[in-house]
Length: 362
Image 1: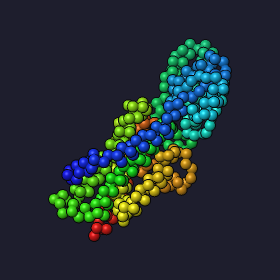
Image 2: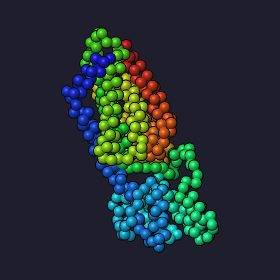
Image 3: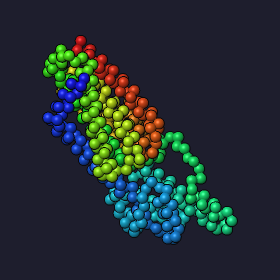
Image 4: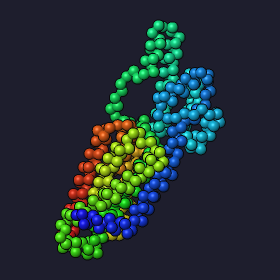
């Protein structure tokens, strides 16, 4: 197995351009599509009401909200939203607020709830100050603290969901392009069989399972290496916020890379020749990316047929797991279900694919 694995890496060192090209392409698309990710989280605010009131609301928002807020002029709020440099703008009045948006999504609904909560909290403080109660000071201090321990049971909702444009672009493009990196290295099995190299390999001291394991291990390592390089570049080079879950994302991606290796084996098993394989890979990869939510959040999809097919798409589950450990700041336990599904898919696809390949040999 080691001899086969080393032989694959020697080939990579001689011709690394395919791997480099796919990695750079993934980085470029992730950067271009997510370049406004940080700016879109900065919400322009115009304080239309009494400054002392709106300033208090703004202080609460800056403390408790996941967004950043910047006070600007009235015309600037509308301009930033129109140009797409902000997902929403706020007009703060004494007892109400107005929101300017270009399109409604889960992030906007989440922001609206945060602003309502800030107004409610400011009103509570005001009533306490007016009451003149001896306990008012104590109660106001308690308002500054978390009065309840909130345990999140489920983060999936048809109406509200957390969204980070920069992270979604990074995840989506990475899981999409790594399919090509893995598939066009698993293809070495089909190439060897088509060119008669496989028969000579079988006659060598290496056992058949060692040859399979060597090629598939190489595809896994190369695919995972691409993921680690891209994630590492965006974290330490571009300062992308992984919400404290960077190492968890790397663990999650192991299950996904394994699933794509298994999918590639299945495609090899179905393909009769190289042209068939080269046709199926881009067709399936684009379809899986569209259905699984790599190009846009799956939460925005309402078509019941698309959602049904998404249940059989590995991209659906890896994106869910990645969001659990970053956006929702969950533990690996929270991502256990999608990871388990990915591992189950890997076993099924690998088993069927290997069976098809061996039957063709017979």
